[in-house]
Length: 268
Image (cartoon, rainbow, N blue to C red; front, side):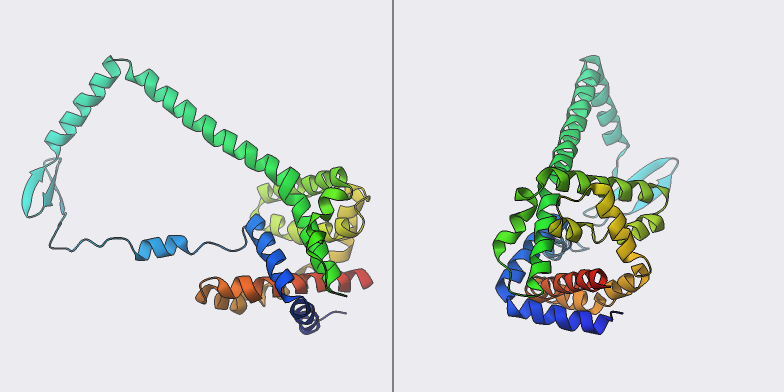
């Protein structure tokens, strides 16, 4: 029976024995999986210009249905502005502006639809096989320093079967998630070992890989969940270090430990 302490000890040893390659592969897996959020939004918010209260003061008063806004110390009734805006909309409608607005809406919807379609195709044909290769790297790195070329394993060994099985796993997880969030989370743990199984036996059918993962995780889902929770302080450390701690230590450490979990379950 495996313990968190043993898995982390072995994962840390394997990671440190092949430090820079583990960091690089973990960074690639993080990018394609979206595990690490960007700190850019927060930095942008911190650097946003601040308007002093004495420069612009806005107060809303509802008097007889009119909204009055006080700016730079002068009272301004926005009803006149609203009337001008309504007149402008009427003018646009008279000149066929409604068709133009519909065209713009359809065009924007089409762009978003195309982006979603491209993302879906990339997920199926590129990201999923790359995940299998990255997981193979960490699984191989458990016993001896692995080579970077392992991340391409999903493309050169049973590519079609890898794509089909990973797609099947994603669909199953999505369908369970549509019921409620918790069943989706539970099933994601059931299918957690699928990429590792494909990394070792790409010729295995999708049903067999999923069934084996479910069998391996049977009775271990809660313990794996607790293992994931044990990384919270490490993740906070990575966030405090502006992401550098995540990139150069926490993320590869976690992935190496997850590979050790796979080996422990497989051996059992």
